[in-house]
Length: 267
Image (cartoon, rainbow, N blue to C red; front, side, top):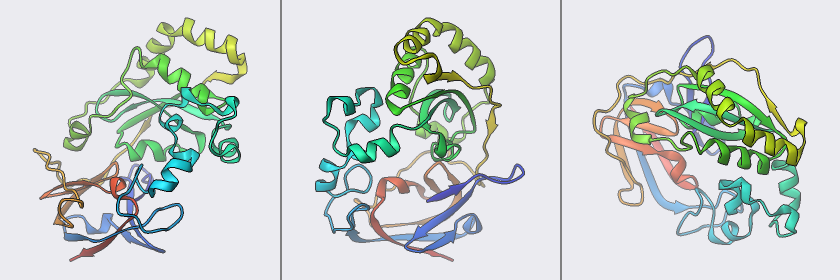
């Protein structure tokens, strides 16, 4: 799904991507929808047919050879570019050696995260955050991993997706949380600046961002749909949050099924 922030305080806008076409999902709220998986899966990188999707959209050969599928993408602090073992050095230079933002978000409670500067606020919308605050900018993805490890000593780095989808999230004072964490982690950040240079890790003076989602009704109980177990998913569309469709029959994370050939029908 493509997600764009709402303008003027409006909820985020969602579109279902089907080839070159896009279907306005906000316009489908309150209407019956049906998603049908044909049984076909295509690698999002090379396009070849695959029986199983790896890392949300790749065939196995691409999963094994692409830098974007390496474990250092999930754990940037394990970057091995300087050891000369990066799978795709040219790709890494384009994607990993550019400014990254370390942020606090409130998706199911306080969490820390990292993203390329160009992915703000898309990353927050993908996670279903209701608030977000950029706190640091670092020079490379590896450095963002070291900073995130430091913050993980004090705050979670994962979202409780069930709580996020139930709407059980109370607003937080992210500025106060930022100040508290920066004070507690001052010595650790100083050590990283000594290692990488003072300008490599900069404190940002940003304002918190509030995010809203088009949801008519949050589910009381979470039932998760899975195309691999049942190829037809249908129900009345009650909301959109993160990468999830919220139906009266259950929820489905469409990102999990990237590369699946799916037909969308809306009444």
